[in-house]
Length: 119
Image (spheres, rainbow, N blue to C red):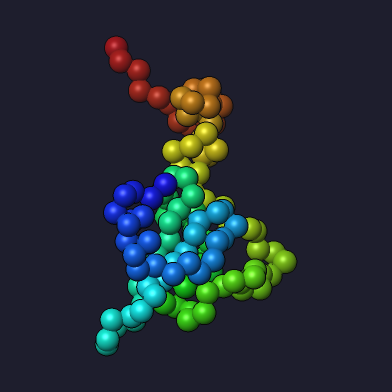
């Protein structure tokens, strides 16, 4: 959710562009000051996390493309997965065998490895 300053700035200067598949709302300035391009920004739905912005919208925010990717955006190849936010720090994060939150046990080591044992 946007903080108070972001809501005031958006109401005063922003023009709504579109909403992405995650519910994030994109804006740009109504008028660009002379000699400068319009600012672009996003108001996140829920947690503010930069990895929740799809690649096509990231390109628009950073002026890589001029037109907003409205209506599906860039065509995707069959082998491409849909964009997903970074799961680090969440319950969906990868936990290798032996991780404390994944049971804390892993398979015994193979080969000639011998763990150090104190006397």
